[in-house]
Image (cartoon, rainbow, N blue to C red; front, top):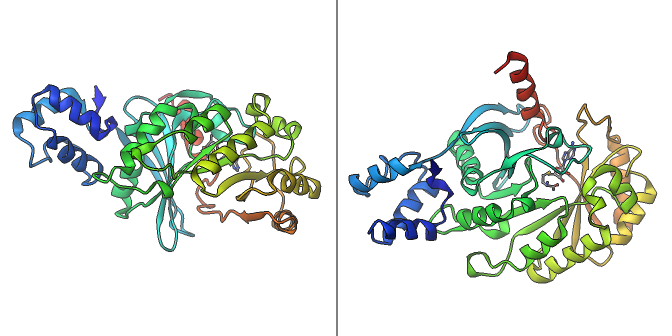
Length: 353
Ligand code: SAH
């Protein structure tokens, strides 16, 4: 059965029209699902019993479940392991900042990109997530924490731009003012750099307005040669092509670009690397997010120490490029991307579940 959460308001209206229902019902149902937090048709008290029963016979409502949650004693960050009724385990993270709360969500079960440092890549990509499943990651975190989430980063497992249609539907759903109404400016899509998909996103008109979504590009190295050692996708698209697409995205949105750069000891963290990185970003309105690489045991990669990270950031800034060393939230609870899921899968395979 399909999940009712996977429909945009327009799709609900079309579906209800085929049942001879008035179109305003779509707004009511959409709002129950995406704003008022229900997980069953019975709870939709202003919808007729007949229609509720009909829908319950055709759709599920809310097909993801919290399997496990770890809360950081240091900063309140909560890391979730979700199981999907459609199959698969994925992770999401709830982060509290001073003035807002952010959800980091997954877009695929696993990931096919094979970045050397990333735990999500270890078993490849099992499947794409639906738009409804992505939205439900946010709603489940809100239910569990009792707190409102205003910001969303699509930086969990998966490559969102390879699940393009579901990503766009997801954005349409969570920005709908009759649902959560999250501002496009508070949404960040993180990509390893699928050049044609970045260009496609630049052309998108979500909700009929001006595209305002933030783009984060996982760069991680200043030259094609070094990038290829860390990220297989670099075999397909050169940094020059990637920068071209990033600039076109900026021309369209005027949103500052973020470049993610995991500092890996001996691979991309020298003063020469910082100089080269500054050279390729010169003139762009960009922020470099420096992340000391989370050591995932399979990778054998290690992080430079704090002093070396600061030196790299200072070097960039001497060249006029803004850098920030990402504040590490939840470092006591399996901080590294994909670790919780990996551990659970390992346990399951040990116990034969
Ligand atoms: N596929 C997308 C989004 C998911 S990864 C992308 O590549 O951007 C989200 C971010 O976490 C990426 O920048 C990714 O490179 C980074 N990341 C993954 N594993 C990491 C690790 N072990 N240490 C630091 N950053 C990591």
